[in-house]
Amino acid sequence: MDKDHIQVWQSCLQTIKENVKEQSFKTWFEPIRPLRLDEKILTIQVPNKFFYEWLEEHYIGILGSTLSKELGQGAKLEYLIPRQQKHTNYLKSNKSNNPIVSKDLERNYGQNTIRTENIKNPFVIPGIQKIKIDSQLNPEYTFDMYVEGDCNRLARSAGWAIAKRPGQTAFNPLMIFGSVGLGKTHLAHAIGNEVLDKFDDKTVLYVSSDRFTNQFIEALRNNAISDFVNFYQLVDVLIIDDIQFLENKQKTQEIFFHIFNHLHQKGKQLILTSDRPPKEMEGIEERLISRFKWGLSADLQLPSLETRMAIIDQKMIQDGVDLPPNVTEFISHNVRTNVRELEGILVSLIAQAALNQREIDIDLAREVISKFVDNISSEVNIELIQKIVAEYYDIPVEKLKEKTRKKMIVRARQLSMYLAKLMSDKSLKLIGKAFGGRDHSTVIHACRSVEDLLEKNTNFKDEVYRIEKKIKNVGGQH
Ligand code: ADP
Ligand code: MG
Image 1 (cartoon, rainbow, N blue to C red):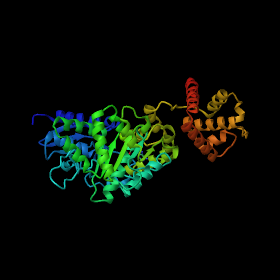
Image 2: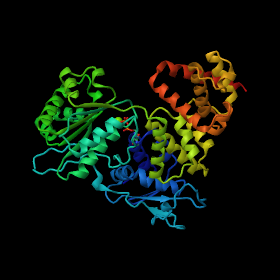
Image 3: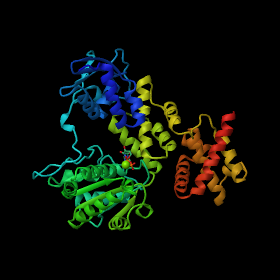
Image 4: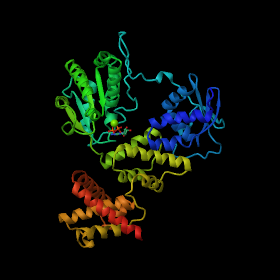
């Protein structure tokens, strides 16, 4: 036991860094200061109570396991919160009833900091009957937490059907594909969790294809291939995430082929995810690809504006944070890449508010988003947008405000409204007014039409991108 508190915390941080997202690490772990080490109690200072609650709620698992790795059994984490906390109003009161944090008591013992039973066994070799396999599922990734939208309806409902009758539907295998951050992993876990919930006797196993590959290599090295295969054959629902990583790994594909066939013949369920559809996979054996197509391939698309708003709402309810509706709308409009990025922004937003004791409002949201997304500008007015769009399409500006229903003009008008919403953060009402006194529902409709078109038409997307850039350039010169 010669490490001091700083060294112990440094070692913990190293492991934590590898296991949490970069943004979260910066936000939640970098501000922590190690203060002292008494036997097995490490005391850390966190900026405020909100921080402490957030850590306990979201990172208790990793804090616990890294600390016990460092200090052995019985390790404890003690938080120290500096005094003079103003109360921030976006914290729902149910949180401040937390019994471990009392008003003037500054030391808080993490309730569940140490949970040794949480240690996961990645690979259990059978031998003894009735072995219990740790499913490796994340209990947070449930259907309840998975917001439904057009972007995921097919995959979600197929997943739901499978969870009710694993192995007994036509969706075997279920192949969920889509690009990064759109919810493949979440959905795959949700199916697994639902099965565990409904069926006591079913064995579910989640594994990434990387892990699968590593276990296979390990088994090869230890001459334990048959144990490896036997183990996988015990499973009722096998979830393999990111199978694109099996590309060009011929031996692993062979063993997977074998396991796949065995499970499929026995009516066991297979769930696979990938970042592209089967037909676009390269370096994967044809016979495997043809099996991937046996069941259902369902893709996940970018969520629409409404779905993004619903996702934000749900996450904020879950975290007990009240986000003003205009902030939700602002974020949904400006963050259009994927759900993971959306989450990253929410986390930073809450952290920034907590750290700086600020209200969550549009200004703060704008600051946070501008660090992630570069298409947000500060002072762009509607007139400028109208002018540039009209120039681009070579039509007179007045046409945007008139009632003309010519297709070209409608398109330009809708796009200007959309950009006004996106770039100016004027209210829907004001935007409508600037377009010949139209009402806010017309603006909403315009935004939706543009969003739809953006999703379908890449030429249009490029066009919009160029126009946005122009507006920003000109806007910046004023
Ligand atoms: P992928 O595996 O496709 O890269 P993930 O499943 O890891 O994406 O999803 C990224 C993050 O977004 C996760 O935290 C997940 O909970 C969240 N997420 C994705 N889709 C949804 C959804 N429809 N509803 C709620 N959260 C979602
Ligand atoms: Mg994933």
